[in-house]
Length: 379
Image (cartoon, rainbow, N blue to C red; front, side, top):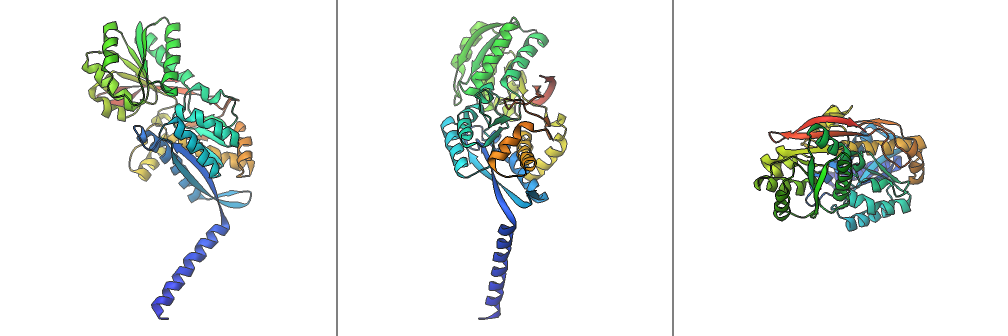
């Protein structure tokens, strides 16, 4: 055996010894991440995944010890494609992977069907983006969220339309998903209670790209405003085509469309949009500025909408581990109701449904195609 071979074996044995030492001293604990990282809203899903990943990497770098044992967190990343059927398959995969908790899913249509699987398995699910009230009204003690709900978003938008912009009527369109339809329903209810006339309600779908038939009908109704319930991938073309048809009225929409990408998809027509997010603007979050710097340094792009919420969700799970002094999924679940955590997004406490106790809604418009904060409403 020559010296080169001896050196090779020495390095190999050293590497194996390091791996053995690491596995002997650190227990790997998996946290699931479920979000749409492919498809038309992949940019939103990747934002969620990146927020969770940043938290995991930071916690591992600082070191985590639970019950006297060194813990290495691992993010089990799964793509649900924003599809209800895929979401249930992803949920079962995460359960089979023995994750101790899940950050996800990103949208209501995925979160709601997946929530039954996590409930049956006794695994905490914290959604950073689900706003449909049904998600936490099913009686599943595993379901939590770190954003507000459509029951807050819809009324805030309707109130702004009626009281600030003095609009008397509205035409309503949604994408027939749990998110879009749910948001449209609560907007309609609040608008009617304020005295606004609802001229019409129409449905499209979350894959649509041509809205001219619906918009031509709406144009004949001469609305003072339009509400659109859906994600930015469809809201962008909807708003753009409305302007092309000469429908020059405000378009109200929710957090799924309230993104920088909406400007790319709608062009100059985006300046007609007023949208709402179920939480504070990142610049107004207690830890938002520092988070934004760290996120951009790690991923070489700004955070979208949900990254800070996914980031906080991971830290909340770890906070529950510490308080339970355990990485057992059932004990993490038992610790969740008493969460009292100050995160990037603000103070986080949950009510007995798993919803935030202190929700806020941020309203935005677009000026010269740039998303601009209008107001923050405490709910």
